[in-house]
Length: 103
Image (cartoon, rainbow, N blue to C red; front, side, top):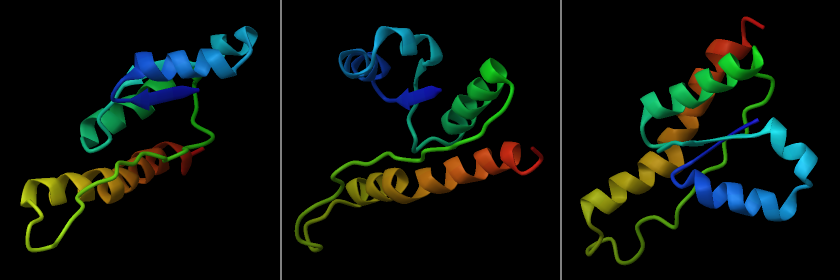
């Protein structure tokens, strides 16, 4: 399994607290900004290069995003919300499909 996160060390710590030690050998933690298509593609490529195939893509990233009045919402905050909450799902599906469909 590849676990991709902005802060992989924090995720690895949570993983270690909730997972028996013998299962940790099956996990790789990698820094990844899911709003960056190239980084999502690289995380998927890491899974394939490590295990030789991709069987499951759990596309689960999120942030609270832009909140507040539409009149006061900053455009950059709105774009970041769309990037993380919508575009990242497209990137994950797109690059996983490139691997999984031929399998």
